[in-house]
Length: 322
Length: 308
Image 1 (tube, helix red, strand yellow):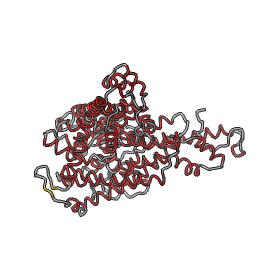
Image 2 (cartoon, rainbow over the protein chains, first blue to last red):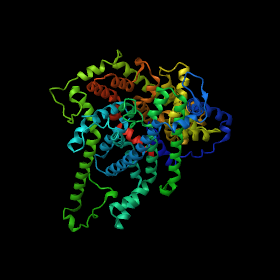
Image 3 (tube, rainbow over the protein chains, first blue to last red):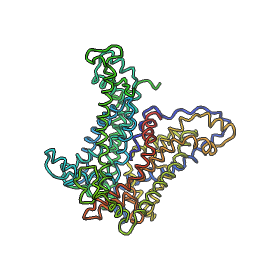
Image 4 (cartoon, helix red, strand yellow):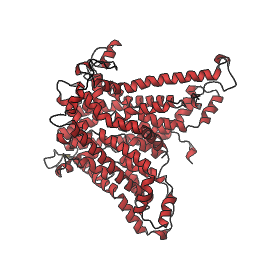
């Protein structure tokens, strides 16, 4: 589910649809081209209407109904939404997810940028390190890793043991509502490899002359980082930030496995999509869950919009592409 | 001289102008030190990154009583055994491990085939054919890239349920054959756009139709994009949890992640040993893919991610 990552990277590199070259009109009839176009696009078109657009409209309608898969959907206006904001568990899920996004994403990106800068050199082994650091991104969202994480952070587990030697209070992180958040943040930070790879590719594009010129002017490493690396990397940072944020909203498998599907203890692991799953597919409150899904879409849309609107203040595009 | 510094980290004096502080060994000495520092930090990160993975592997050979809280990564030869694997392979509730494995494999291979076919066809239309509405469809496809799938999953479930398709592979595979994962279409469109137009123009002059151009020119040339897509499609399908959790109810149809979850839930007196063994077995194909294709994967993320 890390799809977006690669893609948006490409969107920002100026790969917008290029105007196709004019083609001799006589070679092929326009109608023939249209027919061919729609024939080739048919799989995606079918999928778009049947599996995306149609269901989106359906869930929007469902969001205003009471429906449990067995009754006839009953129109109840805004009741799902008003109930949501009185639902303590829903509010807890908002808080947990919000905190996770706000804490986990910046730390993860800071780590991935730091390691990318470490690897941005000509030492021979850097390719090996890069690949090895990428591995957690590939397996991190799997059930296997969630099981391992749980075993490591459980009462009497290795993290507990190490913590006690370091003078921390004894006790597992899995069962302690105050410690579940750091546990999940560590799990996402552990997967710093994917944004790191993208940062590394971005760092390679920074012209070496800039650093040479700065060195001549007597700039130290801190000033070089603040005045060259960060601005030059800001487009890459922008998209890593956007995608990691949106991705973080959707954490599911690890929360499900570690909490045994409950979101406990004390709702401290009740991430948004986990609660949506519980409401929709354990309680079969399809209307309620649809309302939740649409709020998620709106939040993700709003966050995306904010990112794009704010980007003109801090994202620097060099004019090199022209 | 494998220790050439990059411009971004040049802090030493230029060659030929040695400062007193560096002594007469000068540049060479300092770059050797840089190499040592680089490797020290990298290995430290490596240990942190790989620790959980290695710990899982080592634990899978330990008796359950010696897993939790055992920080060591060194196997104890007296207690090392394959017992956990024997229990894990015997399966759950009368269903063999290999059934789960087979189900996961069918789903993953089905996803790869579906995405390769539907993705490349749709991408060909968007990248190589000019027709009215193309830009609109392209924009709509981009718009679905960041859409949380939760907003479509509830109506999809309702429809699949009324069609009696819940508890089958259909809901998990249909979307792959209909290019519902825009990521792959997008990746292929970008790749095709960078192939020289002269190729299909020449073929057209020779009288080839779109089907012919697609099959004989595009498909062979877009092999790198197909390989990258296939690797990701396989791994994502293999690790997928939400979809199979929703749509597969009969243990005979479970994919590995769902079977693993059942295993964790079912063993009340937690059999961590067998859990670890099964967790390892479930990851083997992903790690194998990673080892074989790691350059391709990482380069795919890096170069195709940035340049297109």
